[in-house]
Length: 156
Image 1: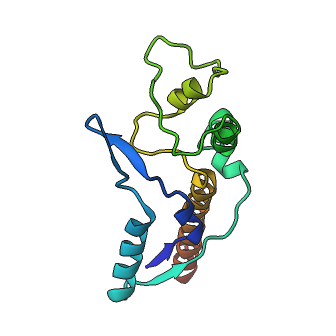
Image 2: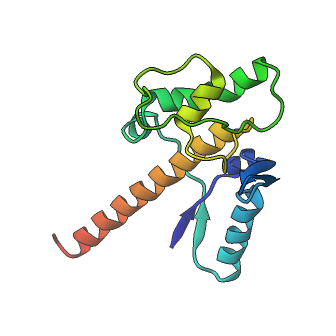
């Protein structure tokens, strides 16, 4: 088995999230990935490889352009407004609210693109998310290569 992982994932290192109405330390943190990587190595499950870099086009086929643009810029906008801590949503548009128009307000934008308060935006969120997309696309490419090899061997 081949696993794709990027050290850039460490950039998404939130400090807190809201769970059951309380501010708690983040459950999703870089150490969880390290735990998995250590287990893969300890049990010799297979190679851990760096992902290849892909263009944005395949990612844009999955996620909307507005959402991707939001993720790319949100931390910089937050920092320009004086924000230094993790950015968590506080409101969420519900059925009946317009989603075809992106609000001007950062807090409203955050609510538009979030579905809970369990994953804060940090300075490294975009870089980590982009690396995650490259991992997924690398795994897909590897799967397609493997399928092609099998078909060739079976003369299909």
